[in-house]
Length: 81
Image (cartoon, rainbow, N blue to C red; front, side, top):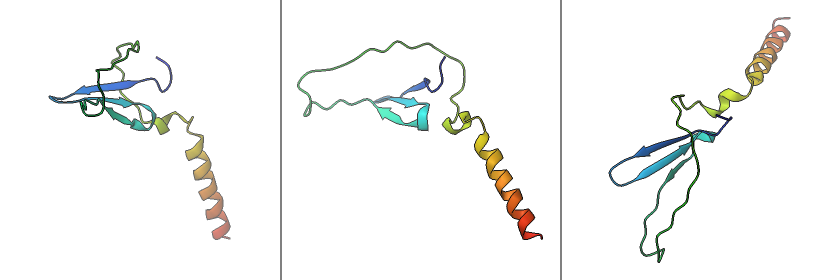
């Protein structure tokens, strides 16, 4: 499965929710007879996976945290002189 392609599907009694891996946006399926004259639908092929949904920020190669800590350590050095 490719990066940022996971979709979690949850179904309740009255709704179906699709939650994407990217920033965990949730889409809740719509039925409004006053808005649409006819039903609509679509198809998109998917693969079933047992892998958990991972927070989007975890895939940044962890460069951010190392650089942030390095900056704080430099600040600490300059304050202790």
